[in-house]
Amino acid sequence: MLRSIIFISVRLFFFLFLVSPGFSDDKVIETKVANGLTLLTMEDHSSPLVAFVITYHVGTRDELPGNTGLTRICSHIIGEGTPTYKRGEFARIIQAGGGITHSLPSQDLTMFITKVPSSMHDTVLFLEADRMKNVVPTYEKLLIAKDALRKERISYVENSIYGHINEEFMNLAYRAHPYQNPQYGWPADIDNIALEDTKEFFRMYFQPANALVTIAGDIKTEKTIKMVRDLFCDIISTPMPERRKVVEPVQYGERCSYLEGSAGIPAFIIGYHVPELAHEDIPALRIISGILNGGESSRIYKRMVIEENSALYTDGGYIESEDPGILYNYAILNYDCPNSVGEIQMKEEIDRIKSEPVTDAELEKAKNNLEAEYYRQIRFLDQEAMGLAFFKTLTGDWKLFENLVPQARAVTKENILDAAKKYFTRSNRTVVFLTPTESVETDETDETE
Image (cartoon, rainbow, N blue to C red):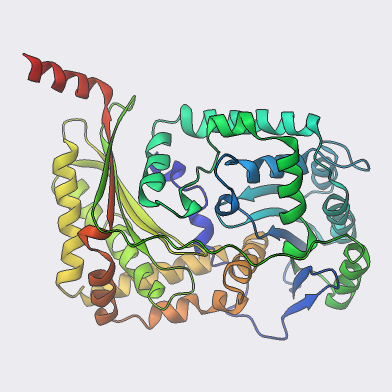
């Protein structure tokens, strides 16, 4: 379904992953290493597990024209191993010890996540220090990484029913900001990325001064901090320049795009530019998204799927990002419902939320759903560490992480009206339609006749 493909990193931005109701300053310890590396530790003995998240502050946002896909290529190169631990050895050791490991590149950051029994604590630190220090891009590794990225692009974009509509939406919504860059790179860029460009990008971004190490779970904080200092302090780092700031120009008119696809049913996305993660309007926008798309009783689903029977499925979300992001809604329509009809119905529901106050029941339900999601996720230690790392990296303050539910609880009906009126304007809207190819051909034939 479209939900599983659109913006793979979106759900990361709702990581509400606490093991306890909140953090305290003495529970989460922030430490700086001499070479610029930042360490967050959180000691929690509720289970004999430890999660490690190595976060590099680099993503598609940092890719220049002609080098799209470079972040994922570097991620794959890291997976190719070091002179000490060859390709596949890292994962083999982790899995043999009962753990799991994976990576997650996104538009603002790149994470390497590992969760293991606490007996593997020292081993993982040795392995992570080795690959931060000793991974070197080579021509052979670059070829392997390019091939892996091409296969990902084929799977998630080219051979996906809804892959192209996702890329088209982001590319249309952003004119100047690199959030328009495709997650899996443009095919020609993948072919043409040179080894020297890869080495320079890797040297700049995948190094201690641009890294955050987050360790949560069954640890002894003092021992962990000492081991990180001992193992990582001699890794050569490069002072990070000030991150280039690209401001997306104000959008002065609705943008629309029409795609033909192999899907047998029409679909469309409607999105609006909204502020960055740390902005004061974000709590209200989270609640708005929940009211519009929070399950089968949400406004858009109820209208289009249950009452009008125009859609098979509707959903949406808010892309929480370092720079201003997108709040989007999408619909997969019934085969006999044209996009024009579904578009009118969805826009009417969006307009209604900015013209009249939401009900007490809707507001309470959206807040309860957000809080429930928060506590459903608190059982997962690796996600707990990812949540800390995400907020620390993108806002500079991990404490914003623990305030998500209190912020949501404080949202009022007036806050919702104000935010909806501010952002849900026609000039701030981007729409992409996907129409079955055969329908387009039939329409053209009818017009000719």
